[in-house]
Length: 339
Image (cartoon, rainbow, N blue to C red; front, side, top):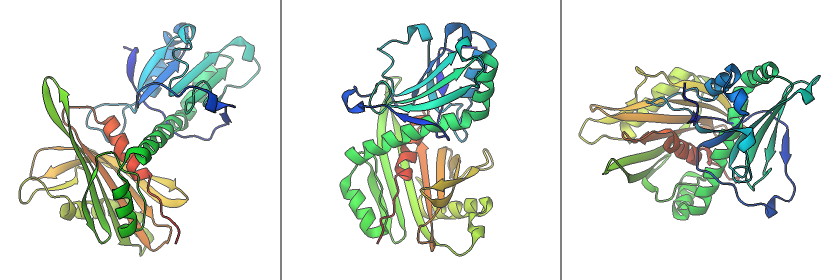
């Protein structure tokens, strides 16, 4: 098993939060989107406990066509964790020592500990067993901390660099606000429906390859709780896609590829509104290509409408994780200004 530089993922939790004082006087964080530094002593990393850490952080992310975990893990030995690395955007720090004897294993979230805008999750435990027990039970919460931090960073990036003209047009025509990606265009803007796209190319192997990202948002009347049943959401999304996103030739259309990967639905509290999220694969019906999608089914604050937000990625030559994260950030930026 190789545990040098590998993919991982982390996201939002019930935690103890500590904002460091005087963060304005600290440098900005370093590192690329999707990176996570795991600071673990070499002896611990090269032990069965280290294998367990690796396995927990390297679980494949649901709904991606290739095996990808939500973050790229960079292991750093505690002895080598110097000022060059302490400013990284995401840090998972482990301190297992006998000085904690008699105490329970615990962890805290510290914001801007060594760099402005940084997120650090710091574990302390008296022994390997108690550390691993807590990590195993809370891994989803710990992953959520880092995922939420990355999402918020992307939202702030889009707020700064995304099209203000699209933001204004969507607000005036649809009644909600979004922070879109730089160079994203508004493909359709109809009553109760928008479709936004970002088309670009990226080099690999000496050739330019297509990357497509898109977001479809549709409003429908809310009439019954049964609209939030998983199977009903799937049917609704499929019917919307068939009409709204055509393929390259007549008769082609985008649809959910649920015969390959079943969408995974989760209830979420979305800014104090009831919501279900799901992820899975889409395919172009009548053709032979597809990719991952992410979807939110959201009860509008007015309790009279359901908002279906559907985001997709097409990037056959590349890993999809970060492209899908970018789409999610736009979707999660939606707000409903009060009248």
